[in-house]
Length: 113
Length: 114
Image 1 (tube, rainbow over the protein chains, first blue to last red):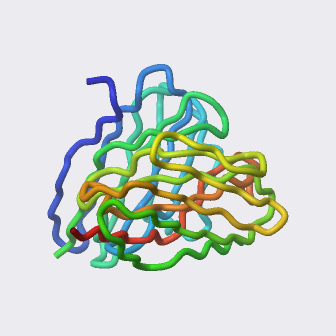
Image 2: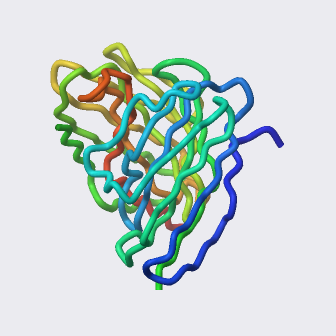
């Protein structure tokens, strides 16, 4: 399967702990997006990479969130000092060229207890 | 900022036609996506409109009017499997760096009943 892969699929963590998610985009897709989605809402943009460069970041994104894409391939999203409000589905998507269809992964469902 | 509005929920009968509307207000608009998302699954691409007009793709069609900030998704010959959330997403130049980023509406939950 050469789709977008996310790991883990589910994560339960205690409030205050740090968590890290991984996304492997479709190979040769140099554009990568992270979104967050809560029940009954559409995906909310978090950050965007073109190759290894983080070009866009949502102004709503707390400084507890950080993302990397060190070699322009896979990406990681880290949340420090998790809060209950961070509970959501974290979606990764990739696309081959600017302003084209984005292919989404199955997401990582985070539950903060 | 961006303002994207679509109905929260719609119901329709199997075999019928349904139109899901989306209105938007945004700066740096480039185009409009429609995605389908089944419960618990990832969004999947349906269509992308950049120019005004109707684009047809099988049972699904999408329309865009840039001057009116309006789009709709038309689903024909509805099937039970079409029950899903339909997400309207505007591609626009992001405030900070100018990259085109899809910004999603909250989605329209479509329920198809027999």
